[in-house]
Each structure stands twice: as structure tokens, then as C-alpha cells.
Image (cartoon, rainbow, N blue to C red):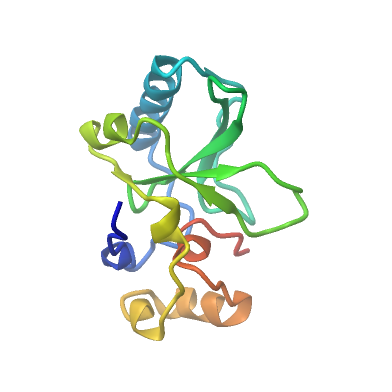
Length: 153
């Protein structure tokens, strides 16, 4: 699958937590439909954005037993997946989202691991707020995924 630019999602507010209960409910229904439809299971309740995490996440287990987190950046209506890893590591190990078409039909955008691994270029930051650019300068995320699914405080 070719790498599709996701820089169009980099606009003011995309790096900060953005509670949206309707979007979260749509995402969660899509998580259940995609994972159960593929013979997997949802294994954790939803964790909402909090200090140090700007996205929602829920744990799933694929039919082959592989654990994943399915993530939602509500401000960007963007879904991603990441492999579980040591909680002391702040960067995510991105994976492709299983059943991506289900999320797209629900009006959400799905990011591939390849898209999220793209390096950040200064020109991508132009539409962010001054505060968001200060966070980028301080935390120094290296990939687009680190910016869109971040640990900023």
C-alpha cells in the first residue's frame, strides 16, 4: 500500500486532547465490529485522553492471539494501532489497523503504520498553534505518529 500523506491533519488543536463523546462512541462501535468480525476480542475498557496522552485507546486481541491497542485521535478523527510495549517507553510501536474499512465507513480516517512512521518536517507544523509548536520544540517527536498520538503534558 503506498504511503498516503497525513499532513493535511496537522492543524490547530490536533496535538491536544479533544473529548468528543459522539466520535468516541462511533470509534468504539467500529472497534468491536472490526475485531469481533475478524475473530478477535476487545480486552480492555476505553482509556480516555489524560495528562501525557492525547488519544483514546482500547486493547484488543486478534484471532491469532496478537495483542494490539486501537487508538483514536478525536480531534483528527484518526484511528491507528500500536503494539503493547513497556509502559515506561513513551513512543508507540505502530501497526496497521485491522478492519480499516469499517472505520472508514463510519467516517473516520485510518492511518497505516507506514504513514505514522514518516519523519516530521518543519513545514508540517505551520498550522499548529504557537503552544503546540512549543510542545514540539520541547518534546522533539521524530515521526508524524508521535505528533498525532503524543505524550505531551
